[in-house]
Image (cartoon, rainbow, N blue to C red; front, side, top):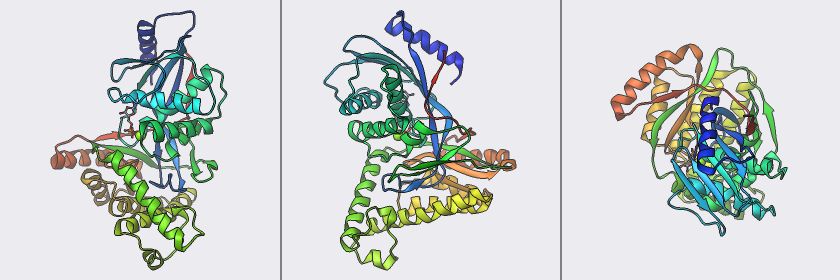
Length: 389
Ligand code: ADP
Ligand code: MG
C-alpha cells in the first residue's frame, strides 16, 4: 500500500488509541496466487504459490493494559476485547486477529494487551487469501513487537490453526505459508505433508500471468470447503482400509477400478480423482515452467479448472464461463484459484494478447451476467515484513 495511505492510517491510529511516547510499528503481508496444486494443501499435496503485491497492513503498539483494541479501516469499526476470548459474530474480522492470540498463547507465549489498526487492499473473498494475510501479519507483528522471535514457518502454522480452530474454516497450510516466506520474483514448491519447500525463479519472457476477478462470491464457499475435507477424509479411510500403505489421499497410486473397489461413494470417487490428477498436472507445470514450454503449462491449467469444476465441484457458472471464453479466444491457459465458488481466475498468456482479451471478456461477461470484470496485473513480491515509517 502506498505511503500516503500509511501516513493517514498512522494519524487515524493516534486519533483512536491516543498518542504516546511509543510509536506503533507497521507490518505488511501480501496476497498470494497459486500456479498449480489446488485443494490439495490439506491432503499432503505439493503446491506452487507466490506472494503478490496486494496487501493487508497493521499498525501495532503494546498498551500496558489487559485490553486488546482493534480498529478496521475497511469496516470503520473499533472493537475492544479482553479474556476469555470468544468469537465475535458481529465483527467477524476480529476473529482472525483474536484467533492468532489464542494460538500463540496455546504455544506457551503470554501476549499482553495491545492496540492494532488494520487496513488492506486485497479483494476479500476473491481467492487471493486476505484472511491468511491478516492472520500472518498479526502473528508476525505480535512476535516482533513483544520480542518472541517466532520463525516465519511457525507463524504460518499458527495462522492456519487460528483459521481452523477459531474462525472455523478447515483451510490447508499453503496460504499462510507462502505469505510468511514469500520472496520477490520467486514462487515456492511446498510439500504440504512435510512442509519442506524450495524457491523457484521462472523467466516468463514474452508471457505473463494475470488475474481476472469474477466479482461474485457465492456463500457456499466455507461450508463446501469443510464438506470437501470430510469427503476426502472418508475417501482416504476407505482406501486405507484396503491399501494401508497410503497415508495421504494425494499419494494414492491406484487404478480407477482399484479405487472403485474400495466402496467409495460417487462423490468420494470424484474428489479422489481430482486430487490424484492434480498431482500429475503439478509435475507437468513444473516441467513446463523449467523448460519454457508455456503451452504445456497452459494446457495443465485448463485441465485443472475442468477437474475443479467437474470432479471437485468447487467452481460456479461465472468462473466456468470466464475460463471457457478465454479458451475460445485462444488464451494459453486459465483456471479458478482459491477456495472456489467465485473469486479470481488465474490466466497465463502471451503479453501481446492482454488488451484484446480485456476488452472482449469485459463485454461478453457484462452481456451474460450484467456484471463488471476486473483485471489485475501483479508482481511477485516479498512475504510478511516490517515497513519503516
Ligand atoms: P479470502 O481469504 O479468500 O480473501 P475469506 O472469506 O477467507 O476470503 O476472508 C475474508 C475475511 O478476512 C473478511 O471477511 C474479513 O473478515 C477478513 N479480512 C480480510 N482483509 C481484511 C482487512 N483489510 N481488514 C479487516 N478484515 C479483513
Ligand atoms: Mg481465506
